[in-house]
Length: 191
Image (tube, rainbow, N blue to C red; front, side, top):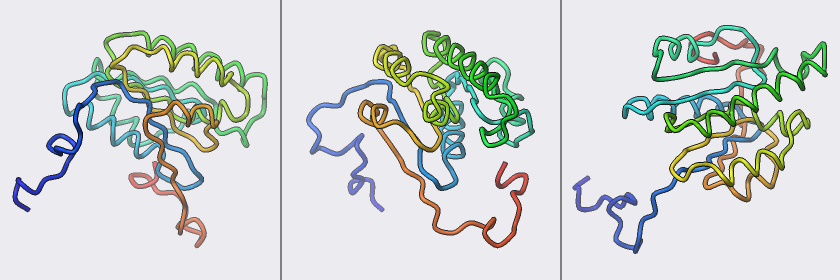
């Protein structure tokens, strides 16, 4: 395709004035790929030399390929995995709430820390959905984030109040999944 036919927003003349701002991006829905999409954006930001912060709410201490890779980038990507596993595996609801509150405090610190270009709050939507953290508190923090800070939230069940203030919301929908055929999650593909 010739460069003159490129209609990407960076060249499209139909837009009169571009605004530069940090985005609030949400990946939600019942389908797979919410965290995977977020980690794709993490790689993109790192590729441009930006620093990234990640807080994982629900995912437990098990190994994932993305976390093993990102740990090899000290100083460029900071990761806090603060959950004990998904809520349906809970053995102690009070402890799950305490860990979610601790994770949220870490999120607030990352939002305020100017060194981070992008912060990803993986599975935070579940923490809000199950009332582990207060949606109003999250809204307040997002509305007052630094102007150029990008914040990405993942997980199913995002509150409608978050959708309202978000700049971009993507809903993942499952059409077909290998688990339905008895195929288990596989390292390097699913985690």
